[in-house]
Amino acid sequence: MSTILFISLGGFLILGVPIAVAMGLASALAVWWGGGIPLIIMAQREFTSIDSFPLMAIPFFILAGTLMEIGGISRRLVAFANALTGHITGGLGLVAVVTSMFFAAISGSSAATVAALGSILIPAMVKRGYHRNFGGAIQAVSGELGVIIPPSIPMILYGVTTETSIGDMFMAGVIPGLLIGLSLMITVYFIAKKRGYQSEEKVSWAGRWKAFKDALLALFMPVIILGGIYGGVFTPTEAAGVAVAYAFIIGVFIYKEIKWKDVLSLLGQSAVTSSIIMFIIANAGLFGWILSREGVPQKIAAFFTDISSNAFVFLLVINVLLLVVGMFFETGASIIILAPLLTPVAAQFGIDPVHFGMIMIINLAMGMCTPPVGVNLFISCQIAEITLEDITKAILPFILVLIVDLMIISYIPQVTMWLPHLFK
Image 1 (tube, rainbow, N blue to C red):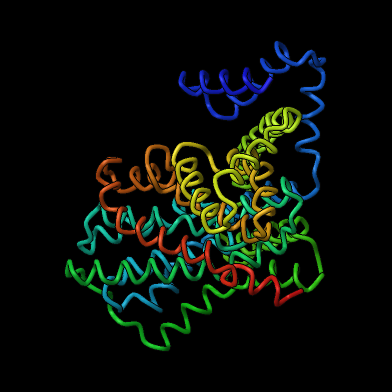
Image 2 (image 1 turned 90 degrees about the vertical axis):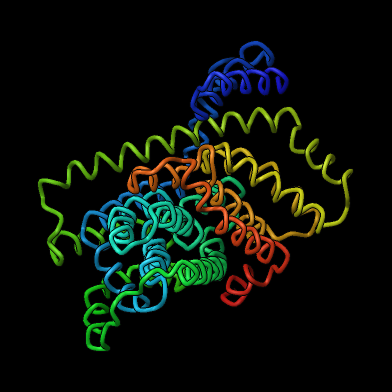
């Protein structure tokens, strides 16, 4: 079965079949030709894959992010970030990073972060004399913080597929997210200083206070989500529902930027996005079940232990593998397929599942801003009106910085595990 599975999957991908459909078709062929298993098992395994209470958090967080994006949150966050960092060299570039960190703590999605903020900040950077390639690259790479700083949809997927605490995953992402955000800001500063980009006019303390008050309700949302989870008030799934209610009240009744006539289209947009993710999860679940039935995880574990019994070498190999996977495959599908296979292997090397989950998510997040299929790049290119080749050249310094961050997070577990251990 595994031979048929991999050969057919490779063939479908070469033909350009979407990864979710390719996994489903390859699994169907493996069951039909190679397994002697009733075809009804396909429907059963796919349903089992999505029959999970924690997965309900995904459509809720997607809807919350959509409500925040349309409800005026992004504009207020940009204004607040500009009041804080706009006067520093490369001010608007720094604003892009800082605002992405704020928005990441709301949306849980990398693509949503780039789309919501890029439409405001990339044209603003171009107007202030920033090169289009540089402005697009800043927003594309900053967008990856959307899945690293909690709440994060990939963290939910990892937690569900590996039976790891989603709350611990959320807490583990805080310090790595801040580390990556700070390193990106330093990179923007030095490149902007070298190129002589202008800074914005310094905002008075009174202006900063006003910007803070305008953004306060948006900034309070992560406090509600994470505070409620770690205070034992509600589960991560229930927190997602609270986030939707909070975003709806702010957008409709307080900021009044969401009209009642828009609600149905917002629900439909979120439903379509959620259904795509669930379709991927269902087919990836069937795919993973066949791999498990064929003993592939055990073979992978044996392969890595044959290479070396050293955890340092294992992490190096895994990082290279995941970086390559992230460049070609969708993040959610990669987590659902690889996490159940690699996490037990990592455990054999003494690596905590929460720590390994962050390593996996950061690697795959980098794939969102690297060619050939980085979704953040495509969104930024469209907004900045540049080609993929142009933005690829501009993003290389940031990728090198992200690789350094990845090595720090991989080999210094305390960066990831300090907060989860603190709250236990």
